[in-house]
Image (cartoon, rainbow, N blue to C red; front, side, top):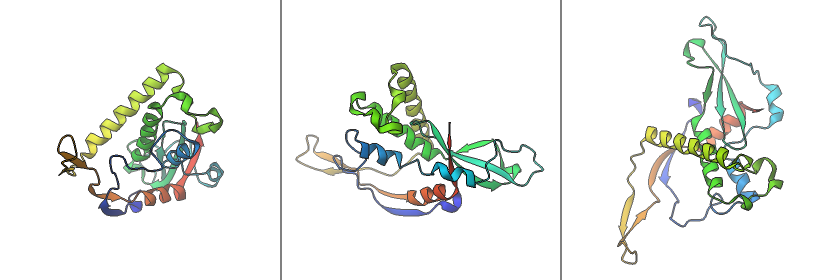
Length: 202
């Protein structure tokens, strides 16, 4: 996927009480917006790409299929990106695009923070059915928290968050969350997935 990586640099628009389409109580439109962050490829495209059930293990083979899997927590389905790679470069049969999976994890945490009666079963796949059972939901959420912890510690973002003097604030200062970052252009990664991926029902 490295050919899809481009960068942009600028300030986040992230005021403490800012309003975006991703914030707020569950609505059909908001669930769709979150779903669209990691679920890209129509099922109809699956039949048009050369998918194998497994990756050849032989190191003599020069054309293998590596599966980049975007695995969201909810609903449970995969988007698979196929790319030609040499067998000697393979360390496992399946490789995940971790960022896509983590967005799914974050979505589960967001859904878990709202009462189930805020969701409507008529939303179909957008309804977080796996959270209905308390034990299953708690286990799922614990997994998502752990995945996010590992990723944040791995990335080790050292961008400073500035504190501004503010006499109106109870503490006399307020955090400036509109921090300056250099980021991978997410839309370019999504375009790559749309071009090279297929959705596989599980």
